Each structure stands twice: as C-alpha cells, then as structure tokens.
Image (cartoon, rainbow, N blue to C red):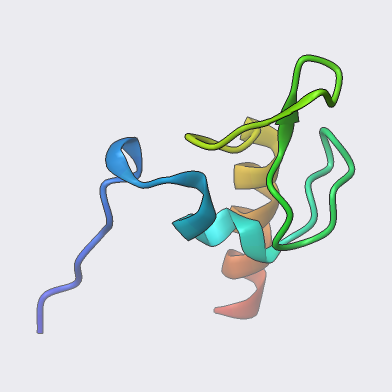
Length: 64
C-alpha cells in the first residue's frame, strides 16, 4: 500500500490537518483559522508554523 502525503502548498487552510489543534501563535481554538496582521484578517492559505509544529508533536505522540 502506498502512503499519500498531501501537497500543503496547494491546500487551502480550511483543509489542513493542523486545524485539528489549537494555535499557540494566535490563540485560536482547533478548527478556527489562524489570523494575520494582529488578528485583523483570517489566514485562508496557510496556518502559523507554530500550529503545524503543535500538530506534528500531537500526531507523533499519538502514534508512538
């Protein structure tokens, strides 16, 4: 069986797996888009790097 890794560069923020965890950078709960510009606009094309790192840490811990 071949594993498929999604291409995050073309994936909208609403479909990114990192949205399953809260964002430590902007403080939003899971499933809420990260914000940019001091919280004035939602980030529709990406999430904060800190959120991606938090997701990776949670996923890694859950799959040990």
